[in-house]
Length: 128
Image (cartoon, rainbow, N blue to C red; front, side, top):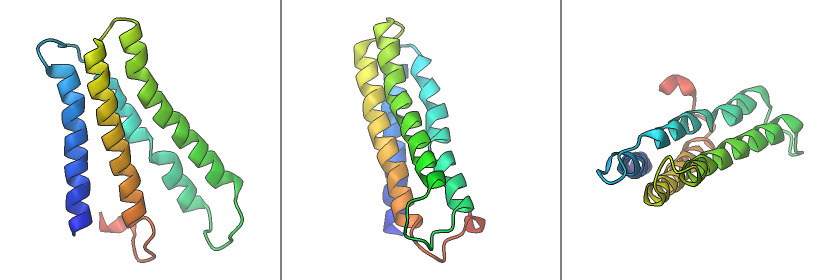
């Protein structure tokens, strides 16, 4: 129960940093909201691989490694997009820093979700 509350708090804080990077009067550009797509896409490859792969064998398998590779690419893209926007002068560097802080908190929250709820054998997606 405490884990769920702390994960909710982490998600709210991360989204607050993202919205501050967009909506503060001195920034007032909403281009950084495109990182929301990366937040939604980042757990998808790993969730698909977990459904397809049998976790009983201890050896590494290509499907799971491909999912981790794709997830890493999505996360790196989420950190790169605000930097590209700032270099192209679409957003200010202060907004970029706020968005990068929000990215760190959000992705730590997503990782925490998989660490807390993903390792239980009795966990199923039908509960949600």
